[in-house]
Structures are given as C-alpha cells and as structure tokens.
Image (cartoon, rainbow, N blue to C red; front, side, top):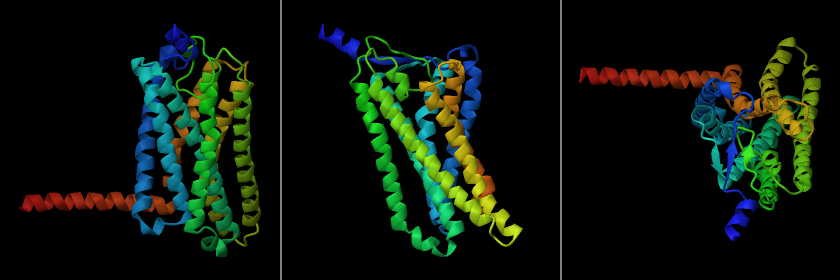
Length: 325
C-alpha cells in the first residue's frame, strides 16, 4: 500500500513525447540537431583550446568568452543527446531523478549564460568607454568574483526549483509533451496547486529581464561613446567588436524568453511551435557562438588557423621523418 501511495505521489519515470504533432518528421528533425551538436562540440572545444594555449589571448574578454563556451558545451550536452534518443530511437522514458537532474542543469546553464553575457557587455563597455582603465578595473580578482557571482546566483535561481517540484504530488501523471525536462513542464503534471512554482519562475524571469536591461544600458553607453569617436574607421572597428556579442545575445534571449513566457501566457500558440522554439534556444546558441566569435574575431580566427597549420606541418614533418628512416 505504501509503495502504491509513493508511486502516486512521485512517478518512477516520465515519458517525453518529443515534439507533439511532428512525430512523423522526428527522424528528419534529428539530422540538423545532430550536426548542430557536432558544431557546438568541435567549435566550443576549439575556441577554449586556443584561448588556453595562446598567451596573447589571456585577457578579460577571452576569459569571459571561455566561460561562455564551457557553458554552451554543458547546455548542449544536457539536452541534445536525449533529444536525439527520442527522435531516432524512441527512447522516451526517463527516470524521475534523471528528469530532475536534466532540469537542474538546463536551467543552471541558462542562468549562467545570461549573467556571463552581462559580464561580456560590461567588458565591452569598459574597453570602449574607459580604455585607459581597462586593465585596472578588470583584474584577475574581479573576473574571479564575477565568475563566483554567476555560479551563486544561478544556484539561487535553480536549487529551489528542485525542492518546489519534490513537494508536489503527481497522481500518476507522467507524460511530458516535450523533448527535455524543464521546470514548468514537470510542474504542470502535478495534481496540486503550483502557484508557488509559477511565482518563483516569474521571479527568475524578472532576474533575466534585469540582465537584459543591464546589457541594453551598457550598449546605449557604448553606442554613445562610439559615435563621439573622431573617425569613421574607429567607429566601424568598435561596432564590429560589439556586433558579434549583440548577435549572440539576440540568438539566446529571443527564443529563451519566448519559451518561458508561452508556458505561462501563450495558451493560443500551437504546442509544436512552442516546443520547437524551446529547442532552438538550447540548440542554436551553443553552435552559433563559436562560429560567430571564430569568424568575426580576428585574434581568434588567426590563432585557430595558426594552430591547425602548425599541427598540419608537424604531422607532415613526422611522416617525412618516418619515410626517411
């Protein structure tokens, strides 16, 4: 009897349906997701390797970029392998504990990425508006403090979600119409009031909106400073530096906020549209970020080419030595 009650209160597993309404094209959808994951893995790992090995890139801007790349690796790995399992092999079952773990890491990395993007906007603001004080303000100690704040705030935003879900009874409900486990998707299965979950979730969204506001303020100040520069060449160089960051910000926040808000207010939006866009914010930015920074940032582009050319020369030299001997 106690086992039955426990099962009613907390299901042993959940069933993830993928993208309801698009089941017939799950296999096809999985193909671009797989290639995006490969790009995310190879691209982020390459940028992190180059930043670590090149002493000339040991600067605040690139430290923040390395943080972003590591977060993107975590976010994509927490979601895409399970998605591909659903799309290609119908591996829809996931245990209660695994579902909560996936939810934790998805929301944790999302919160981390948001605050790192704020830090990168602050970095650009200091570099353009206060260039002479750049190294004095963004010291190694300050960067460490920013990283610590990012981790602590992300834990503050995500850890309570786990306990808010653990207190809920589910009365046997275990089917989640989604490709991954996230807070409101699990909470809506409960057969009790989820008002506290909704309010805490809206509080988290408010913190993310604060991040967006801080980024906007930073870029308003940056643009004001840029258009005061004496030459067009200097203006274009400054705008080009910021363009990569703005692209990454838009790619992350637009689908993320759409996903968060449609869970609460978008009852007239088709479910497959909501689920598909919710997938984009965990799939596209991790693949897009290393491409944007690798192509648009001259220092990284040159270092990546140098590393690969050096590796190619070393391999050629080794083959030549083996042939001679």
